[in-house]
Image: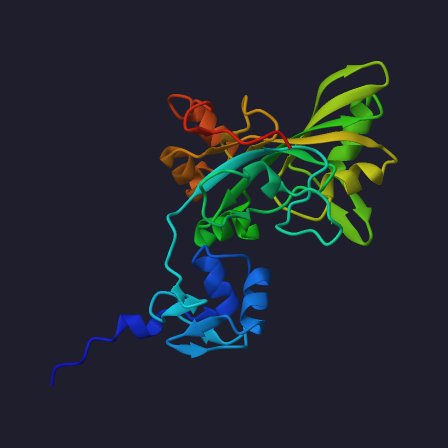
Length: 276
């Protein structure tokens, strides 16, 4: 008797309806939950009002207002986030968001990969490829993120060593992979801080534990991807090489990128957006 080959399609993981709409690049999960509650979403011809019910976005027919939702083209963007914008789609307080920088561009729905708080600026990735994004956000991946931080102090080597040893804030040990002095002048200094884990306001809380005020915080690199000369408030598509580098664990650290032959030109494949 010949054994039947298992049906691989039956093993396809199902996700909540809200997640399915997000994975298809149609809208955010919050927006999807609202659409479902309003009775505007159908699955296989039947209206579904529970956004937590699970479906297979690759096999089930999902429509919104009668129009089928299909997978959008994969988009990978880097944005130079201006200070003062929040990293959300909609803000209940009416503040400006990073999506203001994408107005007028022909893009499917994209989501930020991680966050930068309102007072922070610099490199922010955005995509509709949830698997790629989750790979970067997975704590086990230890993707290095590099920041330039202006502080209201001029630290000596002893103080820098204390920073490097870390500090406990709210019962949580906060550390950095490396902290180096870039330059100083007057009563301020710029530090380069590299993190390989993501915690809420990690740098501000770490330095705040030493009563050090952060004046500016700019993310300048994620793995081997550099912010470069991308203007504030502008976005550009990543090259296929950049997407692959960030997807490969062995190439995610800045050192790995520096050791590769050739440099990626940050000016190619640019997409202009308005100033935020």
